[in-house]
Image (cartoon, rainbow, N blue to C red; front, side, top):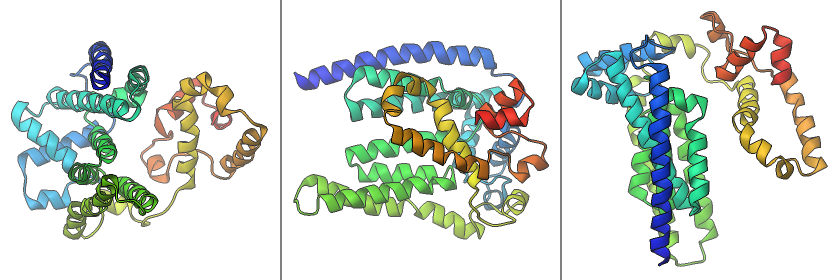
Length: 332
């Protein structure tokens, strides 16, 4: 009976979520218009996809003019061979990937929580995020690694070593910086194994099996790095953006911290009493805010070089509200 109730609740939540997706994604498609001109990075992404579509040689793989790994471009090129390489035709794949991502996220939430209402509300919250709405229709390379990330999390929960290895490899073949996810999974599995080391449970063995799977997920990216002679394809973009090598940008960390409040604002408003429940939290927050004045939010010099003076949609919104930099910094 418990299993039946579990499945029934999940199905009800899923049906409600699918109905929401049909309405919301339909509205996004109608507003954005599949046939509108290229938007933002779509211009060079679609050029790269068409290059893979017309030339699948090793030369293309080594020199395509992007910084990120090739799986999204190959996937869109394969889609293009099936339905065509016009912009509106490629955008259809973005819609399909987004829907699959949303449904997988819904499943992951319910597996973790077992709470149908929380699953539905949280899935809706992710779906209406402005960035997710944009990624769900335009030809960007972000949604596919997000899908693999969710699949990796689901594999960890289910202790599925093979699924985990494939999902982690997928994230790395979409974006190199998803190495953070591999490191996180390895640390998680190692700590859990240490916690279970005195037991002979099947969970301990399953956890241990995920460690080699995580390490092996690095192999495809490692082969690409050897082939490229670096962490990205050999092209002009690499010579521009990696001219100074790898470096940490504390201004970017400032932005990420600030946007935690911006994009979680509905939750913060709903649970503010619990979040800001003690004077020590407020004092630590005030002291930590001094970081901002050392490393304020600012576009990189490469962005400024191409006349981009904002960092993300919220920064652009603030600039639309007021051109005053003082105002923008005060909000952040």
